[in-house]
Length: 208
Image: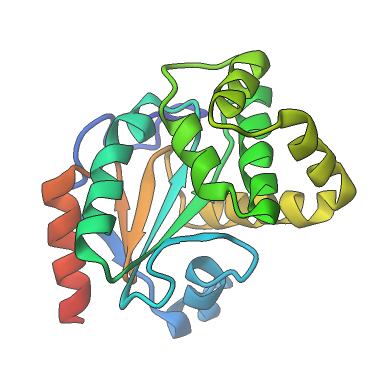
């Protein structure tokens, strides 16, 4: 896991998540003034990858500059594709400065033309920390027009900025130490999840 501040005490860094921090229970969350399962997993303005009607939802809080997020992404997509019954919600959490914010806004803006999956794949395939031009180059390489994406954002900035604010507030409420952080079903996992960990978490989610 990589952070935007010092690691929270006890949080794991760069290792597979082996245990859930806690379970999301709607009543308990509401009592604590925290976001509900519906708000976190079923935000209607956030694009859904995988099967929109899947029986298990995976939400990943991530940053396009996070090397752990990018290293784990192929396993995540492989698991989602092979399973066929998983909703994948990518919760953009741009915590590493202006390039991260730019990448997140460009990818979300691509949803207007149905190109969000293409943008995500292109940006997740980049290496390391990114400049604004490197982000735009990656998008162009995937057949997307950064100028048009920026115009789409500027036309309705509150839509994208609202998503990013909600994601940030939720991550803070759950006291995530950094990226990546996951929710599988209604259970929270901190740190990188490899294929084995993902499959185990999905199986647990289906057990209820």
